[in-house]
Image 1 (cartoon, helix red, strand yellow):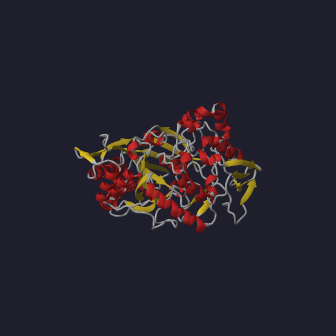
Image 2 (cartoon, helix red, strand yellow):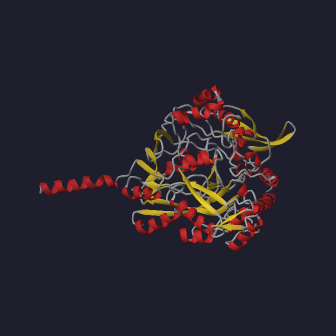
Image 3 (cartoon, one colour):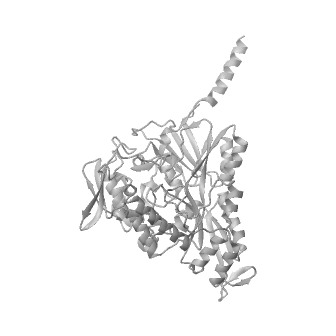
Length: 549
């Protein structure tokens, strides 16, 4: 009898731990950020991690409704928090904001208007090397009413004015470093030299440790006053090879793989068929635009006919059908068909090798030697195609493109780089030799000013600010994107969007591929994750995630 009782107790205690809810979560991702400073380098891995440790003033939720995260009320023209004004003889806007009550940095200091002003000062400084510097420089003043209330003045009338709010930087920590030498701030910021400093974060979590290139660990912020997170500790593990990432999930070394930056769609489809008893797979189509930037300063790509020929030479329907079972729609440009601004009359490029060959002939690449086209000077049409290494689908797409372009006489040399190198060098420092394949993630109201306006070409002279990596220069596009931001009337703005899409499809500074569908691989016990399909990561709501066992 005693033996049976002991055996029963042994079984009880042996199985109980596996059924208990976890208070630690290990998240797998394919990228490790090049920096954790919120204002340097546009990298998805960084924004996803920082979304758990910081918050924007406003965001778009899963229903694409704009909500407050750091403010008390979304400013609009209707509620009077946003107003058109005239300053120094020029029309602009004044947007008033109240910081949510009780928001504190992880060291207990309140987040104040002074932190917003400091972020603006960093962003607009000509030596700071901030990626989106143009947006900060459009802010002409920030009037501080008190610690929680301020009014931001911008130098133009725009409809998406909420995108201009500077996210706070901890002035009590970072300002002395910046003031000492703005030109050296990027290399001396505590976000890189002391990233475990609790005073750098004000979200539900704060970063406590990192193993460069491998993992970043967060713990709950004791000064967070919002919904208490279920998980006390969250670790992001970077495993750049997606096959290895899947293996880690199955072995239990990783609990969950990020949908925004995890398994490729083909892997998720196969994974679901094999493991549906242990995992749920959620597919979320969205505004993630997979494309190829073209270096327009490369003489081989300067002729628009060559760019058009390259797009005619891609069988994108075959790519999305064979690799993604049709779940990722072909992109005809920057604007997805899910956005109301989409214009079906803009030029489209089907797979047409004959048309591609005709355009290449017209561009002067008539002579074919060893299977590849050459111009009259004997210059071979040979281009490098770079992308992020470790991503199996991107590498497969690279190989397909290489094969398809060979059919029209274009030689392609493939290059794969670690994501942080690709982001910080190839893109941000404009080191791309010819072509770079990656994805833009936009919001439902995003205007691609930073990506296409001629003033946004990164260069040493402007501190590598801007995201116009192709070095696209077109006065008409400048006019359109400027007007898109300043036009308050929705109907007239839609007409401008039509002009934009037609010019974009004609000039082709970028080759559109497809809009990605993210695959969220969820253990059945993990609840609360709501994909948005836009640049607003699920981790912006990480405090609502829970182990539901």
